[in-house]
Image 1 (cartoon, rainbow, N blue to C red):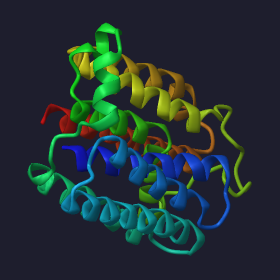
Image 2 (cartoon, one colour):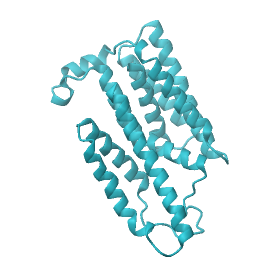
Image 3 (cartoon, helix red, strand yellow):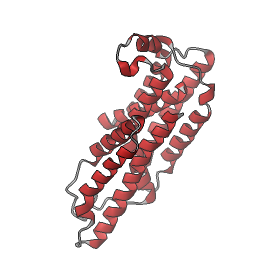
Image 4 (cartoon, rainbow, N blue to C red):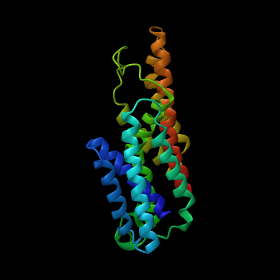
Amino acid sequence: MSWLGILLIGFAVTDLAHAVRRVRFFPECVGALVALSVGLLAGLTSGRDVLALFVIAAVVLAWGSSVTWGFGHAGPAWVPLTVFVVALSAAVACSGLAPSAAGPLGEWLSSVTLPALGSVSPDRFLLVLGAFGIQLSTGNVLVRLILKSSGTINPGADGAMPRTPLKGGRLLGPLERVFILALALGGQVTAASVVVAAKGLLRFPELSSRRDQERIHQLTEYFLLGSFVSWLVALGSYVLLLS
């Protein structure tokens, strides 16, 4: 599972770097370098492992470039979505071939006195780190790509209709995904429904308004599709962690 965890870390760092500094080729290069560095720190230094790390780095570069292209061109953004799905599927399929991580990372985990990390293997650590990492910015990227590909518009994005009063969606999304994933890992899957219910209650006054029905229908579609994709990112990560 070490290769899968490193791939997720590469995706997460790429999207976080893009959110911090939007310079051409900078985010994907940072993500690829971090993926290579993490792999070496995990003791993946055999010939097959080095080859796998370079493949992962190339995939991370392709992901970052395709995301930039997808948002910069009109029409559906199926290219980055295809890159993500194919890369993730291939990593899961090849996870049985990946050796167990060790190296400096394993030595560090053995020396840590925190109870939560005391019995965590390096493979598990990489996978959990990657799973939580993609909740932060990659989840938002996937939501935006699917909204763009489906033609679902934000009613207030072009200024044609009043903007909604809630403007923290890009922060609320990562927070709710991290919360859902943490609850699920803690064995409280049912408690995650509280997050879903709370978000629905916050948006209920807007979605139930009797004015501007066309805008309300667009907002409802935008809210529901974006929310379900966001929740699927968290639950999909939980499924990966169950393996």
